[in-house]
Length: 215
Image (tube, rainbow, N blue to C red):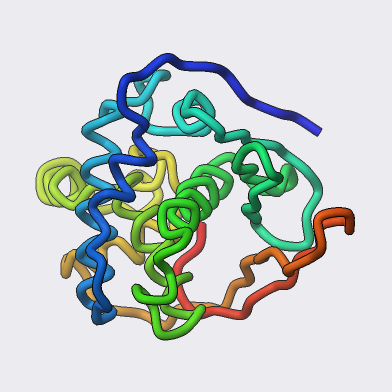
C-alpha cells in the first residue's frame, strides 16, 4: 500500500475555506452544481492552477492539507473516503490509471467538503455523486481553458485528454457540460461509501450505482 501524507503550515485550511462557501439552507441540484463550480475555482486559486508539480492539481497537493491522507490499495471500486478518528483518508484504486486516480481523488475530496452538509445539499446519494463528479471535472478541466484549447489548438479528444491529464471520457463529458459538443449516452459506474460501524468494529464499505462521468 502506498501512502502520501505530508505536513504543510498554513494560516487558513483550504478545506475550511471551501466548506465556508456552503450556504446554510437547502439548495436545488442546479444550485449545488453551481456551488461545486465555485468551490472548484476556489481550490484552483488556493493551490495554484499547476499545483506543486506544475502539471495540474494532484494527490501531492491534497496530501499537504491538514488531516488529509491519500492511500493506494486494491479496491472493488474506484475509490472511497472515510474519517478514521484522526484524519480523512482517501483511498484510490492502485490498479486504475493515473488519470482515473486523479479524477477519483477530486471526486472523493468533494465528499469531504460536503461532510455534514450533504443532507441539505442533496435529495439523494445520486445527486451527491453527480455533484462530486462535476467538481472533479471542473477542477481538472476548467471551462475557460477547455474552450481556449478547443477553439484555438485542437478538437481531438485524445489530444485534449493528454493536455489536461484526464481520460477521454472525462473530456467528452466536460465538452458536453460546456456546450462545445452535443450530449452522448453515459455509462454507469460505482463509488464506495463507508457503512456506519461501532468504533471497535472494522470499517466496511458499500458500492453505489450511479450515472455520470468517471474517468
